[in-house]
Length: 77
Ligand SMILES: [Zn+2]
Image (cartoon, rainbow, N blue to C red; front, side):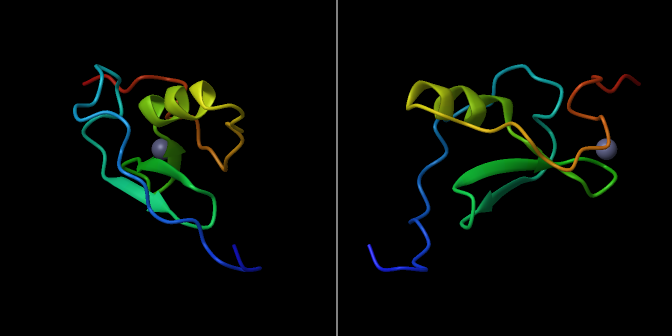
């Protein structure tokens, strides 16, 4: 791979989202980081829980992200 080349987009690891509280949020691919996030109602991207599980299974993932707390506290109506 050449320097600066972005990793190819991979398919989302799970055809259906698990029953996490972010499943209704828009899924966004980040080529520079090689992972998926979900955008919360405040416009903040949070690592997708299913994608984190996938990344952990293939070795190594950082859950660090700019976060307003939505990925920690499930939203309730
Ligand atoms: Zn939020």
